[in-house]
Image (cartoon, rainbow, N blue to C red; front, side):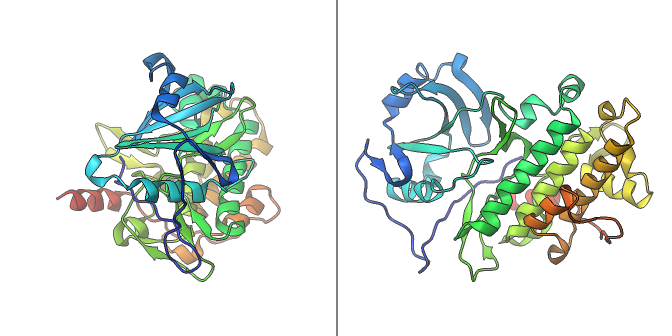
Length: 351
């Protein structure tokens, strides 16, 4: 379930960045403004045969630019009355275009023509983590422990870069399985910066409209609109539990109704049975090392989703724990923020 979104970029004096532009010109950092017709031709009239995905904010199509580059073209489906102006949209997106990391999808440019809004990204041959590996048991059988570790570490490194190396700092706001794309070698690339927010060095938080995907949202952000880098840490913790367990973040059965992966992991941890939550397709053999590593990853996930934001680790610390440079043994894990509260918040906001 999606919340509506807004995106904001700022300079050091906290004023919007305005870029002068002419349609079709290439901007700084190889960011290009495409015409709508150019993109329409690239993906054969936005043919259904070229559609490779669809999310809360629009459909994604595979296309080929005139120079032969294969790209993914996201056609945003934002209601006209909430549409940002052309210059505002371009300034926000171009500011995010300077983000370069091996685990982040490269943004080539955008299209802005009237009510039309498109984003042009690198094309990822293996689609998303949600599509390729999660969900069905057949998919999960091909999601080996080596691949799962690589994906988890790659996403963690991308977030550490955004949170701690970039200036201004960037909070993604929508970390989830469908926004983790996979290249031809199944290396993870975090995508979809439509919700990203930028922070100055001296800014600990900002207050903003709640945006993101239900189940991954941190409770404090969903309830108060107070956004910090620890909001992304919470979302990563949920994703990590999802990767290791192979379970959906929200499941439903007739007897118990809705139940949440974070709650289940907390219950299993308190019963000293956390290893039982590891995806059973991984535990077909008698690999004790795998069990130990998988349980460690789940403990890191629980550390990331703790209710008290000050107790959640920074992403650089998460990387050290996942890499076993820092031990999680003996580290106290406190109660997580419960996702059930977010259902009530969402209902209230719709009234």
